[in-house]
Amino acid sequence: MMKSFISVFSFFIIYHCQSQPFGNTQIHKDNNSLLWEISGNHLSKPSYLFGTFHLMCKEDILFSENLKAAIKYAQSLYLEMDMDDPSNTFGALMYMNMKDGITLKDLYSIENYKKAERFFKDSLHIGLEMFQKMKPEFLSTLLYPMMMPCKSMDGVEAELMKLIKADKKQINGFETIAFQASIFDSIPYEMQANSLLNMIDSIDEYKNSFINMLNIYKSQHLDEIEKSFNEEPGFNDQREWLLDNRNKAWVEKLKIIMKEENIFIAVGAGHLVGERGLIYLLRKEGYTLKPVNNN
Image 1 (tube, rainbow, N blue to C red):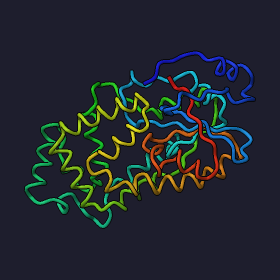
Image 2 (cartoon, one colour; image 1 turned 60 degrees about the horizontal axis):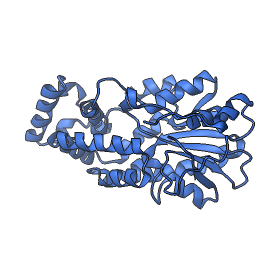
Image 3 (cartoon, rainbow, N blue to C red; image 1 turned 90 degrees about the vertical axis):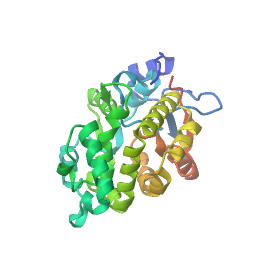
Image 4 (cartoon, rainbow, N blue to C red; image 1 turned 180 degrees about the vertical axis):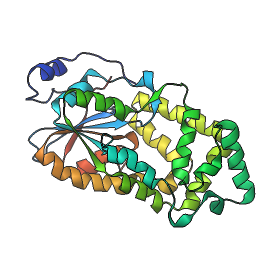
């Protein structure tokens, strides 16, 4: 994702007990960075905001020296959900199913169900019958490995957790697995089912779109990231649930958390951008946000 370079500021922070932020690292005027410093508004120390991509080729997950220095400086890591908590990991199994006994066969016509069934059998080599009760949005995640241009995959958050654990720092989450599952109960199951069927019908188009989104993410061009999300098929129908409402809730939590400690925040890059994104919302609350060189 990013070529590493050694900065005098990151060197200073690593070897001087993390007593100061790692320096004036604002990048060029177009603000293209996934890493942002949050200061001002009576904060005693800056915190850092980083946009992630939940699933990438393992070889593409590379962290800049400034990012590593920001993690060294922070007292703890905040993710969308505490992925280090076993109750969240194993609890996910409890929340994958639809409510009220609804099944996939209830959401599709006979013809469309057979189409989905053939796809899962021919392309994924698994039977759809065993996933009858699963929320279609969760089921669609099984298709993502097909879209990756590699076989070895990992999450950016998982690699960040390794860094924070090496320093024996706390990992926290803004949300629980129960809350995240409730988001997909808020999105009508019929809408989720249609989205899954659209993916099946246009899998090559989705694959190209996914790879394009990966490349845009690696470029760190925030305007292009925002544009790619807005152009993703079906995304705007779910944007309020998936991004906007959550961003507002996180800002309210951050206003309290950042007074008590300086933190490193790592959430999906889509949460950063636009007039409903975290950068804009935090600035609206009076904080100063500066892009940090992340090359």
